[in-house]
Length: 194
Image (cartoon, rainbow, N blue to C red; front, side):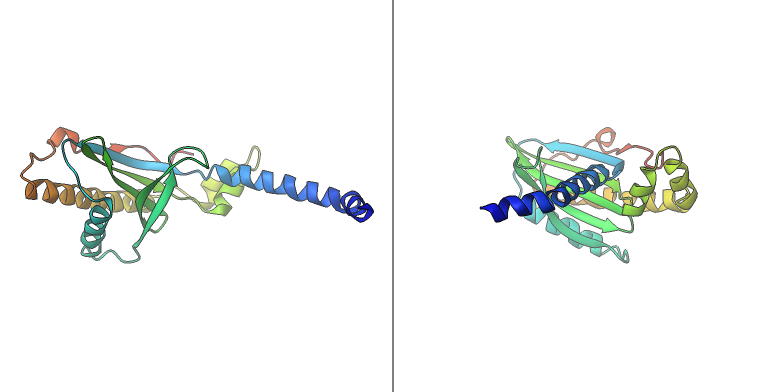
């Protein structure tokens, strides 16, 4: 018993220091500067469809477009806090962009949404946390370019078109009315504002 107290007294400050470091790192990386570029959603009323089958159709369609470097992964994201329920999303990654696609039963219908997220590097996040000069350093080292804007728009355009064509194909097959044009437009946001 005396050994436990001795070790706590001797090494307790290191343990406390480690806990503080973990807390600081978690607070820095907890806000990953994930900025969304665009999102879209719709609810198809009186419609049932398999989430996994929906994701399989989207993956097949995106693969057929010949986009190099695209990756697919099914991820479970928390609905709220750490210990809340999870929902299955299809995560499609290309360069620094992640498409999170949701297809889920909701009531008597089927809900479809996507979020196009710009993923910043850990170095960008660390730089942005430097008081007074962090954001200027990020702008200097990671300039806002037409190429970045165009890359985001290209990926969003393909992803948006594929998701809506899959939804249309499913609805046509079931003899349902297609989503009206005014409900097909994504909601855009400028992800490059720092």
